[in-house]
Amino acid sequence: MKQPQVHPTAFIAPNAVLVGNVTVEAEASVWFGCVLRAEEAPILVGPQTNVQDLTVIHTDPDRPCRLGAGVTIGHRAVIHGATIEDGALIGIGAIVLNGAVVGEEAIVGAGAVVPEGSTIPPRTLALGVPARVVRSLEPADLERAREAAAWYVKRARLYRAENYRDTEYTGFPLENL
Image (cartoon, rainbow, N blue to C red; front, side):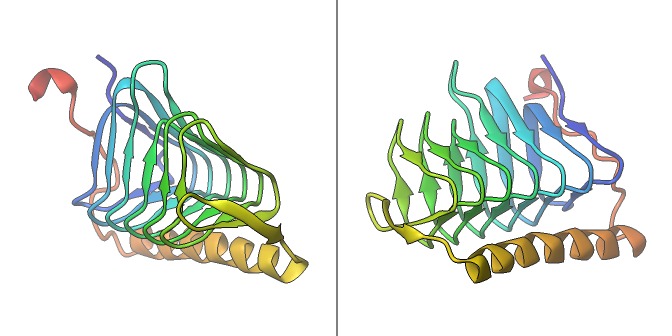
């Protein structure tokens, strides 16, 4: 069984749990209380992506999860077997279900639910339960999302510089569970 692979420049909070085939790329961060479980299919956390506190990311057989580059996953979100494209932002408490695709630089609002198999087009704002596109994003919206991702990259660097924890994360091999 595969073990988590974490780039040396990534930050993994000490109480985050990564299980199975999880890859965390350069300058990405997985914050406090997160659980990333990839027993069935892989999870990829792209470069400079942040997965904020208490988020759960999980897969099913044939339903991998891919977070592109510069993605922001808000606190307490659930991402289940979905694809989140580069620069997208998933709001606090949002849920993105199996086979869903959130397009490049799209924003899924806080508490929204993106149904199984649905697509949120690039550079749009989706709100509600179920999530529906309400408008195209303005340049100011896109800039705020980029700033959020950049802030977490800087914050993760500070945690690493302060040696907040041993950042060479080893994860939990499934055979030990």
